[in-house]
Length: 462
Length: 97
Image (cartoon, rainbow over all chains, first blue to last red):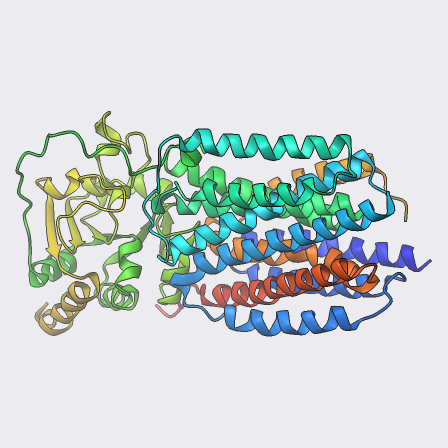
């Protein structure tokens, strides 16, 4: 009787989770989605607490309260640090799955209750859980720049990784044949933990959005495997929703960089190249903040193309001031958002929303590109590879084929940049040497600040 | 409650299709909040962890379960809070024009 009641509660929770994701389709209904998610989670927890096999609550309530207390400050991180927080929470999710699988294995092994099916589900849960845990910790370390963001490579890397994975699968297979070999289980854990580290170490900073999405998917799959271990349909459904979300985001990210999964995982972007000696001396034209201000206020349409460099120099609020100044003068200002701008999917949108840029001014790459030839000024702030025309033209460029925002097609292109050093991926950008490009050298925050000052001060005569 | 392996696979398949379909429709503007929301939802692992910590079948399982409850609850609380915090920032242009 109570069992049926619990299952009914789980059923309602599942429906609420689906609604929660459905409401994310529009910024207007999105907050309702959060409330549905909270409701679903509350029901799931209450339903589980009613379970008749629970004999004591102290081991549940204390970690529940401590976890909540630890979670609150984690939600206060600055928005530039959201990718790290996300990676960290994937690590926690993976850890929880791995620990539950471990505990279940030793319980069942002690009672001799390990069927082949249960063993298979536990192996999947444990491998996915622990590899997600360490992989996400490495990703978080790279995003926080505790670990070098460039790809860490060594000889025979892929061979070693595959050997580790093969070993883990081999050990898993031996456990499937005879689950009572408990000494093999710790080996499986260690292999999964090590594989997670080695999988993410060689992946460079530019690929972090894809890696986070993939790890998101793994965390979901670990929850699905846990559902099979715990014989719980709610876990299977919620895990599948998370897995599907991670998968779709990974595909979006890969498409936006014109790369395949295997290429991201084993290709070590930004490491190769740099050998070609076609470094002819070219000069870029530079402009002053006053020149830029004049160009901008005489334009009728301006497209701003922000990149992660804008967030690094904390220039969002200056950009907002610029947006206000120009809008006041009747200039049509739009923001062109490349899917991989920022360090995780959708990161740039959140950073601009925080700077109070209305979200209807944020335009996706595919929608803005047809408009670019009509734009009077394209203003590139801290973006580099996503506006490099070499992606369209130069077959030898490592980013050839990657979809870009056509900044070079605007009548004038203004590019804010600290120096002529190549960007994240180490690729020289032709855009800066184009005839219609003017460079604004300096830190994004101070350059945009000067432009705004020039507009606010000198603009009264118009 | 009876649990059948094949029932589980059916549920998994249907949920995956629903998930793919629902997520595809999520606004690209909201991909970052989406990820923190699904983070919180996949912390549903708390259900398994609570059972382990509450059934207290062995010392090892109770302790591992309690740690897993802690890890999942952290994800639930921080995931939902930060999603809401981000979503509050998305505003349309003021109609005054």
